[in-house]
Amino acid sequence: MNRMIRIGVLRGGPSSEYKISLNTGANVLRALREKHSEKYHSHDLLIDNFGQWYFDGVKESIQDILPRVDMIFNALHGSYGEDGKIQNILEIHGIPFTGSGSMASAIGMNKSLTKKEFIKHGIKTPYGKILSSNSVKTNTDTVVRELFQTFILPAIIKPVSAGSSVGVSLIRSYKDLSRALNTASKHGDEIIIEEFIPGIEATCGVIEGFRDQELYALPPIEIRPMTAFFDYEAKYQGQSKEIVPASFSHSFKEKLMELARKIHRALGLCHYSRSDFIIHPKRGIYALEVNTLPGLTDESLIPKALRAVGSDTHEFVDHIIQLALNRD
Image (cartoon, rainbow, N blue to C red; front, side, top):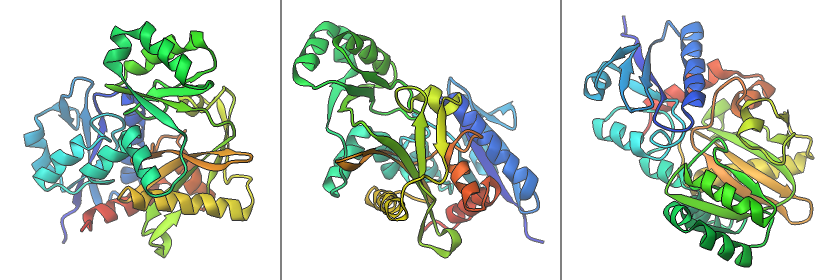
């Protein structure tokens, strides 16, 4: 009789997206235990806010934990989990894991590096400028004056390396700049100020090897925030309307799906990803960013898109695990 595969579901982590990661990991564990208990033996691998690891609720060292699993389902979000750090540790230890490798993760998490890759591959993206969080904290008034004189408002200000729209602000006037810069500076070493593109927000996920396609594109989702834009509250507190699948024409949805595929390939991503877009009524589609480990919570967009094509998180989790176990 073959031994069951030991899956460690890694969740939590020392980032501002700790709670989202807990929920993503809980859904993955539920999928494994409800539908795949005959194939996989799942373990809850929790990292607390301080970086301490737990194996099924018991505090242990990473050196003691990793030999007790055959692979990791990475349900972390934000810094440490999506920026290449945990991926590098797992690569060094030779532990298979879900999602992109360390280099691609580092690029995908860093909005500045992602934007450079978009430009390099001819993918239209809003103009942006990078600022040091330290300069904002020490010379706020000077930075605010320079930005107001050189950058056309409205604009978007956000941390370079944070996800789930954490620390993101829409700036319409001079008085908004200082508050937004200070908010973003709390979430990393760099900040990006980006031109605001008015239009309809959309997102599209892709999955490798799904339904016999090399890179399967899920149906695009149209996002109608009740707030000014799709911020953290809109995403996770029900303050948005998501149209699944989007109400765009068939040909336009195909354009979004192909762009999501192009971004996944251009950044060298693995297993799955989700790309976010803004659609200007005259200037067309702009790529905003890519999510290398999109959320799998009840409010997350990938599960909603899966349901739209007759699938679910249970099928998805099993498929992604098989990809990770067979990673080249």
